[in-house]
Length: 224
Length: 224
DNA sequence: CGTACTCTTGACTCTAATCAAAGTTGGTGG
DNA sequence: CCACCAACTTTGATTAGAGTCAAGAGTACG
Image (cartoon, rainbow over the protein chains, first blue to last red):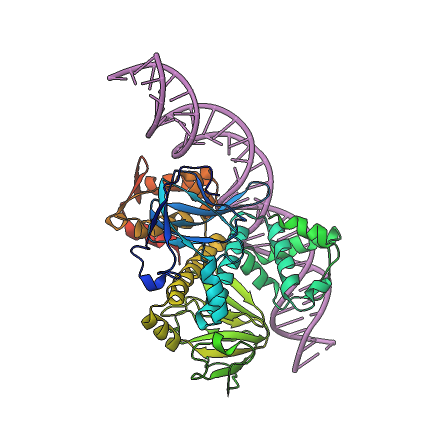
């Protein structure tokens, strides 16, 4: 990250954004970066050390699936920020759509500070950030995944979140209509893809319970 | 809201969640509500007075398009919270998937307090919340809108956000591939729908600039 | 045990994807 | 300044995946 493209570095105090709004504004300097068109600003998997504010130009944040399918999450314009929602590492790539200037802020310190305070805003921020990351995952699912992949992803997610789901059998609390409206499909498609998974022995369906017989097969169908 | 279903009200101190994590935890009581299956917990458009934590059961948050198409944003399980990201009013509906118990917290005070502090966490929270609301809009677009509706929504959004865009002519910084990957379409479909809008006189395209000739027609194509 | 609801299956349609090719635009160097 | 090249955009023909419409099977519950 930040290694393959021309970057002009200038250490400055955070401009424009109110001082109180920045993490440790008085203690932490920000860095202004000039980035050329199509260059990477953040790579997916980068440790979340910094967050950014767009000063000029346009930035895209995106995720790539294994097979190259691409989903852009947001276009960011001057004044917009990105990277705040990352926890340990960034779960997206950010690239310059045009030539871009961004302001970069140290991020780690803020998180630590917030955590040790255990303050309201910290707890809320962490939960809001988690919600953003989940929404980002769902955007990829809805924008680029096939019906089969959506169903598989949904089952994996539920298996993880529902109590006892990690044991391999999950009792779905919602009906097929809700699943369809969540996955951007119709109820018929949800049924057909579930039955397909049952036919090929990946899952078993008894009433509203679904048993994951071959977790590996299910995981490999998710494609991300 | 909260009027058509059986609700058991009990005033308690916030349990489980650390005291410091709740807004004015010592001053504000929380209310525990029992909600029956399919009952509404929050209605889209409700003033954002409260936020919620799921204690038991499963909750869905969703949005409806004018014509009845429905997109579920999230399934919420015990421990999950919702409503924090709302600003003046909730932009989603929350309903009980199963019989549900939720904990309700006063929300308005926190927002006021945060705003007058002008603190780090407030600024970040507000921006994170805005990002969640935007992601929610995008989920509806990707899950339930047609190609034409996606294009129209995109153009309206860009007209609003790009400088000078409100004047009716917008210089898109990104190419067709990026637009396609943002809208969950292919580049060919983006072109075809744009050309369609041009043919019927809604927009004019000159190089990379797009002029919105009939804003009303474009807005009515967005469908939300 | 019958009624209502949810789920599953089948036949057919249609929107958007894919594959292919031609037309534009913009930048570069002669 | 103009010719050429590469990238981007538009258009056309065809395919495929999911949607729609319709009906039957399973299940829950009174």
